[in-house]
Length: 486
Ligand code: SAH
Image (cartoon, rainbow, N blue to C red; front, side):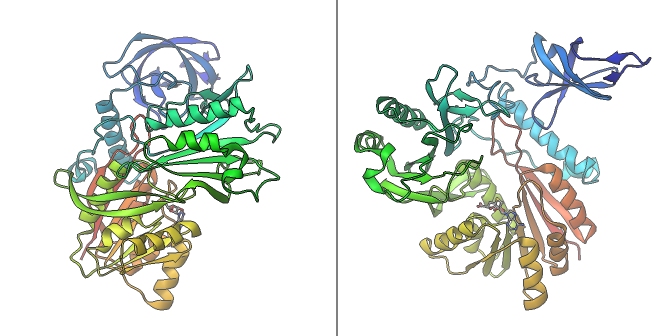
C-alpha cells in the first residue's frame, strides 16, 4: 500500500483519473497523483485516463486502464488488433513520429542522468534519430509457437505478454506478408493428417515452432519446423513425418521459397531451436545482401555484402535499418584504408565485413562459436581477406591479445548485448588508446554508463545518433563516436 500525504493509503481497486506524462521502460504510461506514481499499461503519453490500482507499493502502483477519458493527440489506431494482449509491440498505439521523439528523448535523458553529461552538450552532440519509412512489415524473421487453444483447435501465433498462452495470429503486422500463407498451409496440413502440436505441459506432441525467414534484398524464403521427435532424429528428407511430400509441394509453390528444414528439439525448455537441422527441400541456407548506404541522405550505394543464413544463424532482423546503422558505423569509424580495427561482439561479422573494405585489417571477437564460423564463411564468400575472427569473450580475448601479443588498434567498434560492455573490456580498450571508439548499443542506459567510463578514461563524446530498428516497440538502438583527447 502507498502513503498519501496525510498517511492515507493508496490501495488496490482505488480508481483515479490521471494524465499520462511519460513512458516507462516497458512502454507503460506513467501518471502522477500528488507525487505518487502510477504505471498504466496501454496508456499513451498525453492520454487522460481512468485507471484502477491493481498492486500498490509504497511510492508507486501498477494500475489497469479502465477508460480513455481524453485520448492523446499522438494516439493512433494500431494496425494489429492483438497489440494490447501480445507482448511484442508496446507502443504501437502511438503515432510513429511520437515514438521517434520518445526514443530521442530517452537517449538524451540517459546520457544526462546516467552518463552525467551536461544537457546542452548532449543536445549539441546528438543528431536526429533515423526513422523507418514504415513501422510495419520490417522484420525478416519470425518464430511462431504452435499449440492448441482452449477449445482444442490447432493455432499458430504469439505468446500473450509474459505468459505461454498462444494468441492465434498468423499475420503479425511487423513480419513479412508471406508468413500467413506459409503458416496456414502448415496448419491445414497438420489438421488434415492429425499431426499434433507440442504441449509444453506434458512434453508430448510434435510441432513446437515454425521459424520463417525472408531475405528482403534477395526475396528468398526459409521455413524451418521445430519438432519434438524423440524417436525419429535419424530420419531425413522427404520421409520426415510432418514434411510429407504434399506439404512440401504446396509450400514450394510460394514465390521465393528456397529452403525448408526440420529442426529437432526434444528438450523441455523455452529455448526455441534445437541443435540439429535437416534440410528437407531446397538449399541449406538463404542469401541476403546488406548494402552500404551513403549516410548523407541514406541513399543506396551499390556495393553490398552477401550473407548466407542458416536456420540457426544470428542475423539482424531489420535489414533496411541495419544498413543505415552500419553505414553510420563506417562513417563514425573515419577509416582511410590503413587502420587496424577491432570489432568486439561481432556476431556473424556484419560490421567487420562492412569496415574491411576501408580498413587495413579488421579483427572480430565473438563469444558464440557458430556465429564465429558464420563470420569466417561470410568473409570467404565475399572474398574479404583482411578480416580475422576470434572466438571468446571480448573481456578475455582483448586483454589476452593486448597483454601477451601486444596487438594494437586505431579504431575499436563495440556492439554488445543489452547489459553493455564488461568493465575489463572497457579498461583494456582504454589501455590500447585507439584514436576512435564507435559504440553501437541496444540499451541507452548501459551505453550511458559505459560512456562515462570511457570519457573519464581520456575520450570525448563526438557524435551520437539513434537509429530506429524496432518500430512499435520500446527498443532503442544508438550509435556513438568517441575520440581520444590528445
Ligand atoms: N554486430 C553483430 C551483432 C552483435 S549482437 C552482427 O551484426 O552480427 C551482440 C553479440 O555479442 C552477439 O552475437 C552475442 O553472441 C555476442 N556476445 C555476448 N556477450 C559477449 C562477450 N562477452 N564477448 C563477445 N561476444 C559476446
